[in-house]
Image (cartoon, rainbow, N blue to C red; front, top):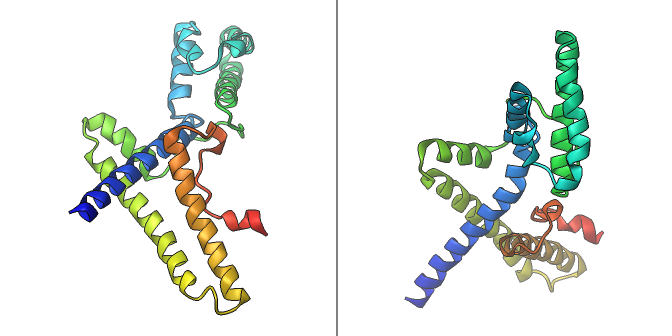
Length: 210
């Protein structure tokens, strides 16, 4: 009975851990695409000639730079189609860059519409569209279960042979570190103890130990 309750608690905890991880990583990745929510609000701002819809995506100290780019886009829109397209693109880039910098992310340019963001972001959008989170819950729970079990099984099997020789011992340490860092990364994300730029489980920690 105790074992059954513990397993249910573990599964629930792991689900919420990965859910939070997805919210703070994949959701922010979604913000740098042409069909993402940041650019969508940028387009609304341009259409209304009112920067207000875009301001919520940036910190207050970034407003002057964005307003300068916005004013330029509005002015250029009356000079011709090519000028408008170029100025709009500059405004989109500036807004997304300032947003990502404010959240601690690097900016490498606005990605094209239709960029594959993976099943988690797609599933989150669908959940909001149809009013049900069941499919998303199932997806995330399965991924957490798979990720933890794979790393646990790998470490557990290598632990059995760890004392045979030095190479076997090193193989165990590598598997152990990967398992521990993966679980630790998920847990710290759930606790909100990592900055946005750090919110990625360390899938290959061995690179840090070479």
